[in-house]
Length: 234
Image (cartoon, rainbow, N blue to C red):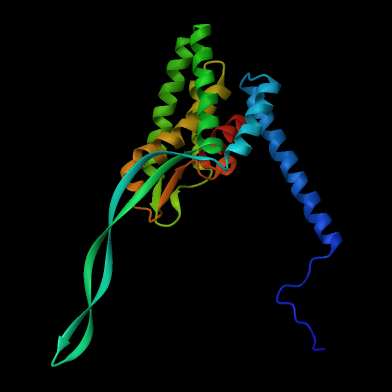
């Protein structure tokens, strides 16, 4: 019997246990940070836990909301007969492609629901000045996000990771009006959603993918993380 060669060495049980413990520790730290951020926004613990579960499970769900048509350059080949001999001749043409634009439940709809909850809470409490400040902060954050967001073909909308949270923290400090965490979360979340995604709607379809999902990275998407990080830092 010949010797067996492993391209990838087998992983031993102790290594698997260490990897599992590390994964569990990271998950606990991440979930604890999410819970703390939600509770700082005035969301009851049981509701915050439910939202966190929805964000995790919803990360695997994309809901189609639109279909766009784009045209891409292609190079084809046609045969040309010359003196009885066939020659392949390349030619340039345009191909039509359908692009489905979807929204991710965990990465976009869950943080959007938190924003709507905060807006309706401010309306119920009659804190219209704070609501105006949150809307103003959202506008400023969206303009900053749009200025730095760049559609990258095959990747998505790219922008500096810590820019939206830092901008949201600064806006929370200056426009918080007694509740900087709320302004930071609303402006951080909606700033990325509006400035990076919605304001680049016409450019999203040119990313070279059959489907583009807003908030597609789920709980690790910029829409979800920007507001949470801002709340923890403010």
